[in-house]
Image (cartoon, rainbow, N blue to C red):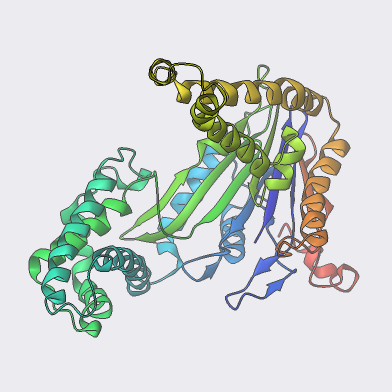
Amino acid sequence: MTAVVGILNKRAVAIAADSAVTMHNGKIINKANKIFTLSKYYPVGIMIHNVDSLMGTPWESIIKVYRQQLKNTSFDTLEEYQKDFIEFLRKENFFCSEKHQATQLNIFFVGINGFIIHEANKNIKQDDPDKEIKFQTELKRQAQNYIDVFSKFTEILPDFAGYTYDDFDKFIEPKVQEVFDYSFNIEGHIIDDETKKLLKQAYFSELIVKEFSTASYTGLVFTGFGGKEIFPSLISLHVYFGFDNKLRYFVNTDRGAIITHDSPSAVCTFAQSDVMFTILTGVAPDLKETYNLNFKNFINNYDDLLLRNYPSVDKGDLKFLLERIDKEKITETFTNLMDDVIQKKYVSPLFQAVGGLSKEDLSEMAESLIYLTYLQRRITNAEESVGGPVDVAILSKGDGFIWIKRKHYFKPELNSHFFRNYFV
């Protein structure tokens, strides 16, 4: 797992990340690199969180290959760096063969099949003599339900504008039978062509939309300055996998930041951000949720409380009045009042202070937020999924990308050639 943060003001952006990564066997190691220079010459960096590879290829390798081919090329804006990096992934065929892309896609399909099969089997008894007939009928219905749910989502992933079901079907047809064999035939289910088409339409319906995805993703966080940008910005992406020269990704606009005169500071947290959120807002996210839930339950139970404590009041009149109270509106008002207090007493003053921090203070704040997340995991019963050395860097317009703290897997004093050849 991961804890990553970016803190921005007009002077600079400070970025920090822990070193913990969870292996496939559940073991946690504390040696991962999550911060990289995107350019050797200009103040642009990138952080990664969640999955550390793209379809089996380590992101660290991909980023460093991109950096080598970028050389001293610069772009006017950070957004142009981000778009060029995505185009680079397509150009390199996502660093895997078309066969491997199809395999990755099939894993995604199998996951969807598992959900649909589970829903189809929910109300079918195993000793039912007609269970196969009922399963086939329910399978079609659940596949159609899946299609209906995702068809309601209207925001299409960037690479899939204009991508049709026929385009998709043409790409997957040579390999998709393997998915059906794995999910159905191996269990003794023989599905007909109508069901196969419904399932393929279900795959497609989820594949192209932004709002929701069952697939695991990598968070890519681009930050720094474009050539014509005097203030820093931060762009957050979710990247899933690529196929047919298209990449399943989207820009996570809710977690990005652009520093301007009107918006002079920002704190962007990623992955395991509960502790950081607590420090920034003055209340733990789970505690805030508990407050809201308890208040909602209290309001919903208030009717019974009144009826029990005022026996002399006409029950019919009291119920008539209580039924006309908009409890959802009351709960919403309470939540909004809580949010206003948090904003005025905690968030706004803190962000105002961040706007005036020096580069040194920005880096200390970034490191502290990561360290406190690690400490909370260490002193409680929570899994120690944040840990290891904290890497910290500062990016500024004048000084470029400056490492404040950085772990090496080698001894720098024994490898002077690495630093001598860095800009070659």
